[in-house]
Image 1 (cartoon, each protein chain N blue to C red):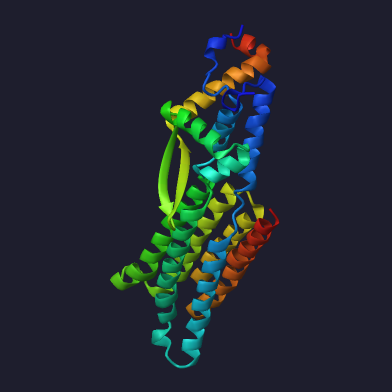
Image 2 (cartoon, rainbow over the protein chains, first blue to last red):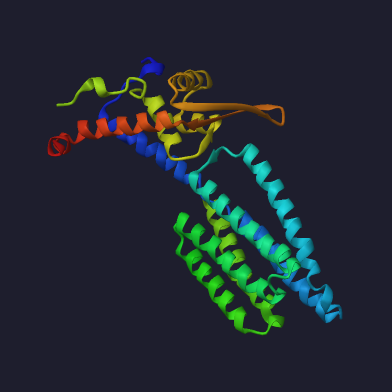
Length: 198
Length: 103
């Protein structure tokens, strides 16, 4: 047989196409690292926010966010850069998910840092808007990877977004931290577990 | 009737069809992943990739990661069209009734 020009029947050809598409599917399960990494960075910001308040410096309670969020962005960029250099396969789903989160993340940065500094929105509005944006990112991701649990997580983000519009801002970060555990960390670790199984 | 002239000879080979099937469902794929998936040898796979590249069906990017060469392959718009056309011809071969219904 000439390996360069091996001809096959129509049925065999269909089998080859199916087999190859299946192979890409098996290698495209997300390992959930962005959810886990951001989950811990946001949770740490929430916890340090209250630690600063309880130690008597409420005006500086924004400081953990100003430290952890840019740090998260840098860590994310480094991991993404290293992964991209060595990864064997990049799917359309990964690319789409990446871009939707770049969009949401950029909007979060503008709402979290630039908008309050300009005075156009009060700091009390930050948490509800962040939760709504996290909900958009989570919703689109859930539909791309077809995972119902993540869809419910996106709904939880929006419920939290609405709830924080009516609740005393003191409790905003408690709610945000709780939702991060349910809607970022739990799905993140679940994805990682599934990834290890493949 | 099937017009066999419609069958793209470039895709009518097991390995090249396998390569195109891999590339159609992803954004880009590493050379080693294609090698593992198709079971082809380095030299054999390179020959097939060059043929597909020459026909304008795929794009090949080469660069170095930690001083090791890395080759990335991506399907082109022409390749996507050719693959779609090929699958259609294939469907007509397997299910000739569909072709007659369409007339």
